[in-house]
Image 1: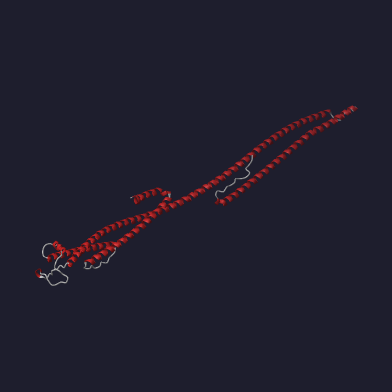
Image 2: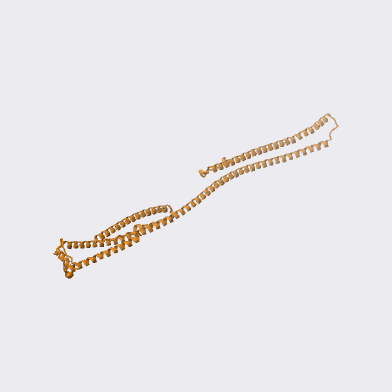
Length: 422
């Protein structure tokens, strides 16, 4: 039965373990060399034992042949010896010599001894041949057992080599599994650390998102406040325009009265007498429009009607002052709410200057409000862009991690419903 000529061939597990594989290959080559040396020594010992057995068998055969030759050579010499005296007796008898040198009883006893010796020799030879045959049979049986033992030894050696090879393969598999387990542990630790980082990033982004939502809420409140202020100032502007129109009408009426030369009776004139001294460009005739105005003032003399008109004018001026004071109070309230202290300038006595100042202040406040509104819109746009960028990053980070898939879907649906659908 053949034995494996070469040992197992180790294949490298990975490229990075080339040094370890080389060392294992060297160990395998050394083991194969030792195994080959053992096999050579066994073969040499087997040859030596076979030669020794052959030599012993030859010696036994030579000894048996020598013994056989010695046994068969002795009776012939004795027969020749016994034949010699018989022949001598016969010759002597033939010669007629009556004297006998040998006793016949002695010769018969010698013959009996010779025959007995021959029988013993035959018995010994038979026993020897039987023993030799038994020895040959036992030698053949021993040789057969030896051959079977050698075959079983070779089989056991082959099985041993196969088992050693399988053990080495299993060791390699165990090493690979251990390396895979270590790799899995390392990947698990890295994933855990990455998960913690993602959770921290998610919490930071959630905090930023809350801050941005708060900023958007404040922006909406500011826009609503600005819209309310705008509506309020529109109302004030409308009232101012109405007062301006009324004032213009009053001025026009006064100009028409002066143009048509109405004479104003002074308070010191008794009984309503009129000073008829010449006045440059003044006439005492009242025009039709002035007459209509005077008629609207009621019945009575002209000075009474003019005093009524003057009283109405004073009332209108007082109303204008009250409205202006209310406007200033509202402006101060608004400036206090914004944290600013606008300079309050003195008012002129003339109504045109007052209206001009009111218009200028209103225009200035409107321009300031427009500037603040544009700035607020820019801030809102910037905040919306920042929110969009942060939200996009947040979505990208969460989308890359499968652990936050459900959280991502829920948050996305909520965000879409809150900021896009509504």
